[in-house]
Image (cartoon, rainbow, N blue to C red):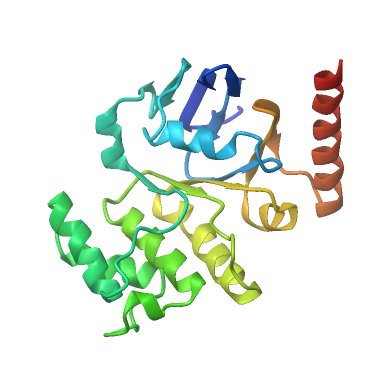
Length: 240
């Protein structure tokens, strides 16, 4: 008997236009529950726009988003955490104080702060101000902010941008640990090797279209071949 795959989020014909410019067109995504899903694509493919629609930052022009089996609504943000673009940090505050500001604003228990600091490995930063954090530490603090509300879905837009190899390795370990805690992770990237080492399933966006969705190929070389094949196919369609 084949075990049915549980789904966290799906989209149907999801489309976003800015004026006459179609950024995302008719994409159908199926994001499995408690997995790491990589949204892959060249710069300008529509990855960030897609993630912004999932978090309510951008309103779809057409199509639907379904979360946990029902049509997405703003109250679902109570169960969604996100880090889009740069972390919203107060440089003059410590990691704890940054998290305290968020828990106070959202009415969350302060006990959660110590828990998320352990999850992102920032529980030893003490009185160090966020402005003195490395880029990797700032990214992890941004993720800590997104984890405060115990989300079922965590959305990360290009989380490894600007990180050195050690920062990337640390962030990868953190992301891989989250599904075991009941958190589905969706993150975008254009770095094939990073995706290959982090995700369970992928979707490839090219020129706003979903060119592929499914299992991760067996090797980085296979992923590169698949990626280039999809990019070239859509380049030919654009020229036609």
